[in-house]
Amino acid sequence: MYGSVFRLRPRPGQEQAMIALMERWGRERRPKVEGFVSGQVYRSEARPGEYVNTVVFTSRETYMKNADDPEQDGWYRELRATLEADPEWEDGEVVVSM
Image 1 (cartoon, rainbow, N blue to C red):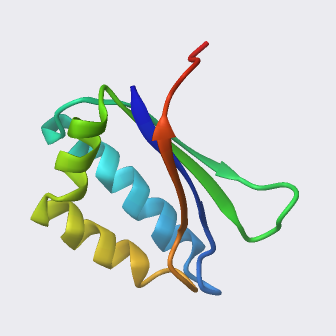
Image 2 (cartoon, rainbow, N blue to C red):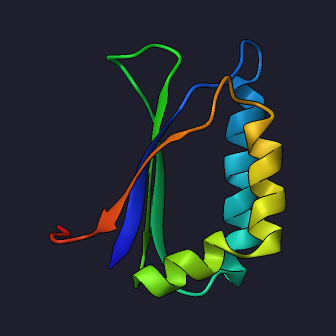
């Protein structure tokens, strides 16, 4: 399995819009995305105003296929408009899943 952990900081007043876009991805994109296993969005307690997200795919290939999809890029551009800066990404192989 392969995935990413990433941090997001919405612009002031854009928190709900960011969350709504994440929920929309789950409804609209998820059924179309090959290899998607799971995803979570966490509101950080240690860093107020920041979110930590995780996504897992069956392989690096399916992860990259989604990343390269023009529909995913369009969704990401909408998400990015709600954020103060680009997300901080940490991609990698899942070595333990419990």
